[in-house]
Each structure stands twice: as C-alpha cells, then as structure tokens.
Image (cartoon, rainbow, N blue to C red; front, side, top):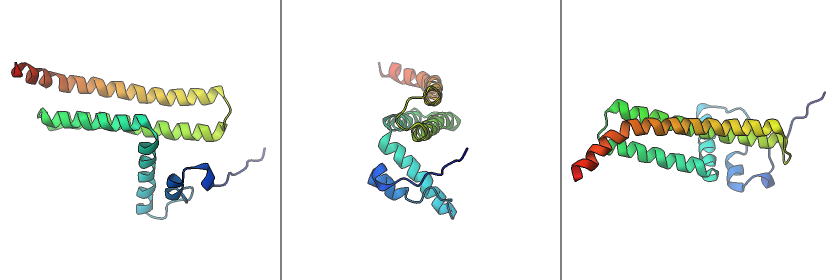
Length: 151
C-alpha cells in the first residue's frame, strides 16, 4: 500500500484570514515564539468559528467574576478556574478532532468518523457538566446568603 502525502491547504480551501495565519503551520516551529503563535492561532480560530467555544468562554468569565464578587476563597476561585479551563481545553480538542476527521473522510459518511466526533463532543459535555456541578457547589451557598440578606 502506498501512502500519499497531501499538500498544504490552498488559499481557496480556507478563509483568507485563517490561511494567512496558518500559511506555514504544517512545518515544525523554529522557535518558542512561533510555537506560541501557532497555539494562539488555534485559539483564535476556535473563537471565530466555534459558537460553543465562545459560550464556554463567556460562562467561564461569568463564573470567575461571580466568584470574585462573592469573595470566595482563592482556592475556590482556582477550582472554578481549573474546571472552566478544562472545558475550554476539551472544546479545543473537540474542534481539532472534528477538523481532522473531516479532513480524513471528506464529504462522505463513515460510522467510525461519527463515533470519533460524538465521543469528542461527549467529552466536552462531561467536562461542562462537571464544571457546572463544581460551580453550583461553590457559588450557590454564598449566592443564596447574599439574596436572603437583601430581603
């Protein structure tokens, strides 16, 4: 079996903004700055193209802001930050897996591609549910006290 190496994407295959930033991304980064540039390009791509990533960032910011407003302990804020960060990481991995699967199967249906995409989405869902549980445990008690003290 011979394997073919695909060429880097052409400008017509991706939006020009993404293509400009990712022009040489198939090459190995020559230094640490370039590595960070590629990582930031991935985060930017996810933010620009993935609605759920934007939602998760908004909820994360809201949870951390509410934690600070309610004067939670530093360790509690850190736990909320870590669980929220893990949701964002899972969303980035989900985007990467979906893109890779789409590249592999093109416009055809394959049961294994469906399983890979569904499992990646399931991982995001599990992490989001855990983050909601953690936030509820840490935020609800002081929030209820604040609301009750207002009456």
